[in-house]
Amino acid sequence: SCGGGGENLGDQYLCPDSQTVNIANNNGTANFTALLAPSQISGYAKDTSNHPIANVGVYAYMPSGGGNGTGATTDSNGYYSFSVANGNWNVGLSCCGSQSLSPLGYRCIGEQSTSLYNSSGVVNFSVPHAPYQITGHLRDTSNNPIANVSVNANGNSYSACATTAGDGSFTLYVNNGDWF
Image 1 (cartoon, one colour):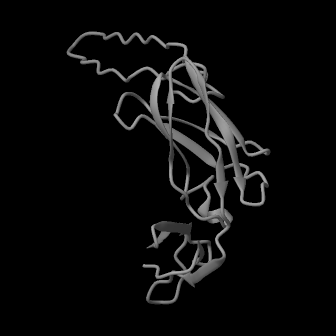
Image 2: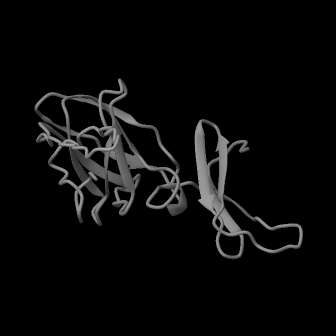
């Protein structure tokens, strides 16, 4: 288990690949080697008024498929940091689900790329608030609310998402344009 904290491998290490162990009437062995990560990505998530955005997931992956992705969560100052292998990385902020932009009233934004070779890279995000809302309810045919269901909308190269509350209500934070 990787990602630092608790009983996970510390985030200063690269997460080793998983292994397959075939058990056929005998015991098996799985040994792992955790390499120290030679590079680091860090930065801030702030709104367009330069206020920090706390508790939002930040992810990174190698677009070439060169290894496991990694991630972190912004702290109270909007800061994040994680260690990575050398190479090209796409870095983005979580849009939907828990610890993400959309439920906080922000527009989802695109990923950024960075290339690292035994170095540190800074990837900062400036996130606009969504100026409008689409609200509604999800109910069954007997008018009973349906809770904990994802609701998504797409429009103008942006997406918005929410999860229905206990009363079936939801709020999607959006900008001008057609949404479906």
